[in-house]
Length: 163
Image 1 (cartoon, helix red, strand yellow):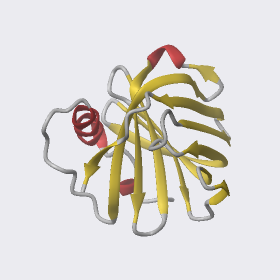
Image 2 (cartoon, one colour):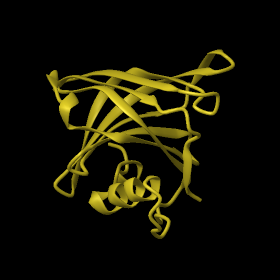
Image 3 (cartoon, one colour):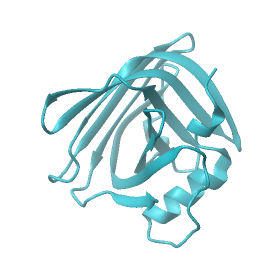
């Protein structure tokens, strides 16, 4: 089982990250091993949770984290400040200079201040958001069904939240 430090720890981190993306000042999260956290604004095109369409709940903020142990997370935030995180460790490939493919091994679900993790197999494919509008598309198979998300950035560069 993965450490909860790689997930959206309670609502406080999600809230801090979302409000930081919105331009509000908050203290940086204190999470061991966290190298960076960036937030992007845009349009959530699709969100599926355990095979159920949850696209109408998806908000206009997406967060990306990276850790010293090579773990990466893509956080899709909902309008009620919950989070669905697609996470994987290492193995990233680059089919071209502006596209990356991140293998996934875990889905983290943060709801009502509690985070649970689900073993998963899948990938996130993402393009360079510093070259205009970027796309993050994730899909993973779990024992609880399919989880997927697609987010298109609005063309403005992502905002560094941490450090």
